[in-house]
Amino acid sequence: MLQDKKILYSGMQATGTLTLGNYLGALKNWVTLNEQYECIYGVMDLHSLTLRQEPAQFRKNARSLYALYVAAGLDPEKNCIYFQSHVSGHAELSWILSCFTYMGELNRMTQFKDKAAKHADNINAGLYTYPVLMAADILLYQSDVVPVGVDQKQHLEITRDIAGRFNAVYGDVFTIPEAYIPKTGAKIMSLQEPQKKMSKSDENVNATIYLLDDKDAILRKFKRAVTDSGSRVCYADDKPGISNLMDIYSCITGKEYDAIEREFDGKGYGEFKLAVGEAVADSLKPLKARYEELLKDKAYLDSMIKNNDEKAQYYATKTLRKVQKKVGLTERIR
Ligand code: TYM
Image 1 (cartoon, rainbow, N blue to C red):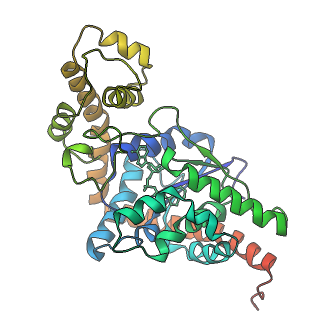
Image 2 (cartoon, rainbow, N blue to C red):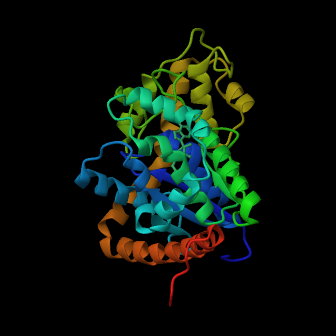
Image 3 (spheres, rainbow, N blue to C red):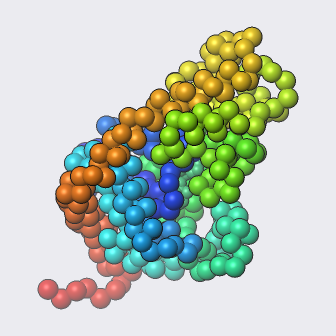
């Protein structure tokens, strides 16, 4: 479709500010895998509508997310980075795929159950069919690989099931995508409740590191991170707090767990937490600086957005027309 390279596709919701979990579980790996694949990254603003958004802030967040992708090292001249809502094919394919998705399957989605429990006053149909739109995102671009954190694994599985079901009826229309889930960092936990995933919407400000936090905030949050009984830095199931910090440190420095254990042998939790905080703050510093610069250069971002929207629209339309034809919708008259 594009070049000889396989296609990598991923995206993030355009709500709030990215967290260290989003970065280590996904964005950082997008940058690492970038050269090997033809890459397409979406700012998933349609998915964000499943929760109520304040329009002006939402627009700002979506643009900020675009800039963060670029600041993290994704070159918008080499990668197709675009807004999901600018390509109408997502919603169109989503409708068709929803007719190939069973309610029984959607009922099993753990993220739906979690979000429905958290937002009991707004369990809308969009929240329920969210995985179908995600399947449409991925399948529209004939994606081979989708790098995500472990919380998205079930959504990738349903995408594969929907694609397989469609292909079984109509022939090889969709590429069946594979999830790419990193060995470390696939599930970064809250700094305050290490049994819980680090999340954008945590009410406890000390639980989450945001990518745009300043160094003082990062150091303070790590200093306050909940640790476990004992004092030895080692990776263990009964030490979720320290194990989470080791995961973070390992992702940032590339060091294995045993090397980290040796490095902090005989040193206490306090010293380790400070080292993790320093490593995280230092590694995010260039990203923040680049982000600030980008936001000032409106003309550059605008031109990248325009070019890439057109590219995405082109690829998406190709698949969409094929699907429409296969299911028997009347062809356009030219
Ligand atoms: P979202 O916006 O919730 O999260 C974006 C990415 O960050 C990963 N992630 C984490 N990884 C490790 N530890 C954490 N604590 C953590 N929190 C989040 C997520 O796994 C994800 O990879 N449904 C998707 C967005 C989406 C999408 C797509 C992704 C829409 N369409 C098509 C891939 C392909 C989501 O809500 O991600």
